[in-house]
Length: 86
Image (cartoon, rainbow, N blue to C red):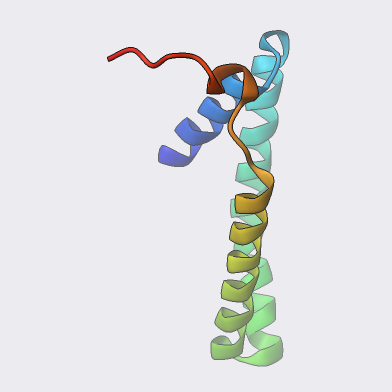
């Protein structure tokens, strides 16, 4: 799963080592709950506004989240200045 690998990398880079397993568990729980509930939320939205508008609203929300994360997430300052091994 590429998503779990990416979240593990972010937690390993940014999180304190003593809370690594807790942060991984929270990330996995949120991911599973989101996957479980997304079908019901999408179905309800499709019943309210139709499938085309539902997909439009979900894509607008996805792009908004993407741009928010682009602005929010930065390189780890502790690892930014380290020389890379070739």
